[in-house]
Length: 110
Image (tube, rainbow, N blue to C red; front, side):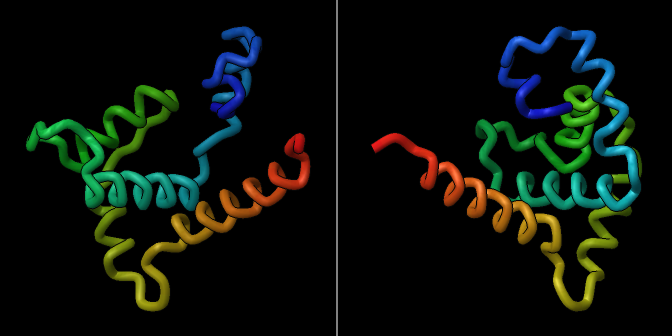
């Protein structure tokens, strides 16, 4: 799903449904989602409920994005076994966020 659709920018549910097939379908993108799930599990920004684990988070994301996220533990093991950079997606995410903030700063009033 596109973030704009999640923010309720006026796109209809039909538009969101039409776009959902475009996102998070390739295996590389699923491993990125597993990396995000693992990071959220490690950071633990959730309530004090100790039953939250990567599989629980994956089920939640599956519902949000309308995709099947299976074998999340296997994907986490693949992440753990990376030799050079274990946080590929998080590094890309951080760089993209910093670029967007700089871009927004350039266009901010005042």
